[in-house]
Amino acid sequence: MARPKEFDPEIAVNQAMEVFWRKGYAATTPQDLVDALGIGKGSLYNAFGSKQALFLRALRRYRDSQTEALIEVLEQPGPVKQRLRGALTALAEMDLADPDHRGCLAVNTTAERAGVDQEAAEVLRRMLDRTEEAFQALAAEGQRAGEIAPGRDPAALGSMLMNTVVGMRLVARVAQGPDRLTRVIDATVDSL
Image 1: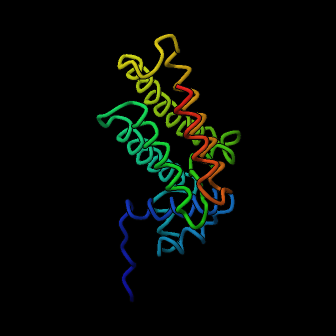
Image 2 (image 1 turned 180 degrees about the vertical axis):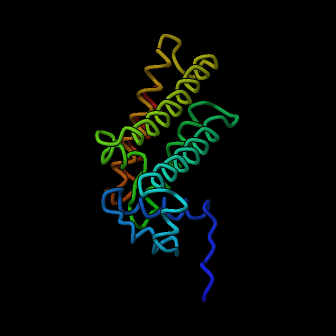
Image 3 (image 1 turned 135 degrees about the vertical axis):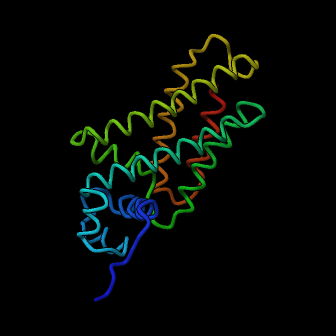
């Protein structure tokens, strides 16, 4: 009798994340996950409990990796506006380079699941909060450095920048080139 194939759950979460990112939660079937992970349905459910549980793990993985990567760029040394432009440009380039035009898993999930899945909504809220806090801190730093007018509310700027990112990630799904996103980035940085 053949021995069941062993798998690494951490790698499996990454593989599942790719499937959910490409297809969305509702369109992803358990068979899609089994095929992507290379395991049987029993192993899938034994390891993760349910499609929903695996999705939440994948969404948390995405949240952590994406948020950390953005914050790392925002916290580099150098002028605040330059770092902001670099972060926004990196997001645009990543989205435009994706041949599948998947956009952002968090933005896609917000549109698809936030109204019907409270656990996913909470994961997404935490991602939005953390990202907005990073933008707020950047705005406050810019004020201290004299790059951003001192009378502007850093919390409001953080919210505006967060919404700019969400909009850019949506537009990138249908953009045929970088021009529109470049205009958004330029206008956003210039508005500060």
